Length: 332
Image (cartoon, rainbow, N blue to C red):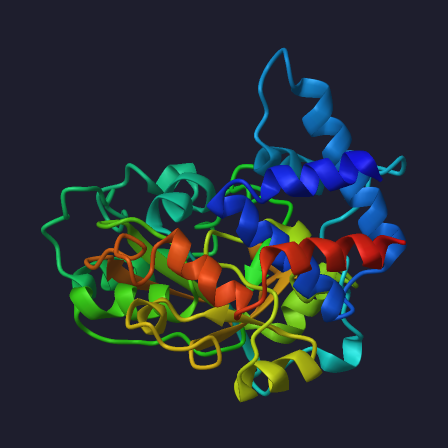
């Protein structure tokens, strides 16, 4: 236990580590994992962090991430998707699930090789600086391509890491559709709490939730700290909307636009979120792919929405010392 306590103290020394620390305790408080499972996770993370010190320095946050990727003796992920849902709670009210990715992930990993260089009806490479074509023009070409039965690359799968997907984050909150480049990508990025960079081109995948449930089998879960959430992930949403989603075994994103104007922790509800195993694109029915345009507004670079501001939101006036004590007490 001493090693675990030192590991928690190491997490507490950086802002990113403090985010993990709060999400670990909130996962406990939400009853998303057992003390036994958390002990196993933190012991492995602490051992990995300790074993690499003095030779190759490993950041405690990296040790946490690498532990989350570990498999058990049967080859299954030991800690991903540990808060498995009951299959009676497959949707929070919408029959369509969705996911947002960068356009280059679609182009590199999901689009068939034969269509990348075909002038008609090929899809353009979109880059930074901005591509001169309009959002509507790109969507027209995209629609022509995905109408073809041969558009999907072999073994194309939604999820992260994109080249070998292990975890796929989905929502049942509808995609925000808008005509203008400067609004559509920003609005969806903000609502889903995604830390995409300025000038990233975004694409949304919409599909029938029943086909996703069938593809994932029982590997659908409410997200915990162990699922590798992005820089603006939080386990517990204390808003009315967040509590309702939690009752239906959904997580809730942080709305980055609300964070940027310093809304309180109970007033920055975004979209629903769950994690599944990687979803093979070819089996998803009712599939629509929407080009959302280009991110034109940065997030996370002001005193209102940087890492320090987000840590304050996560803490909700609790002390970091009490968070660490709570985690250690939970493990006993």
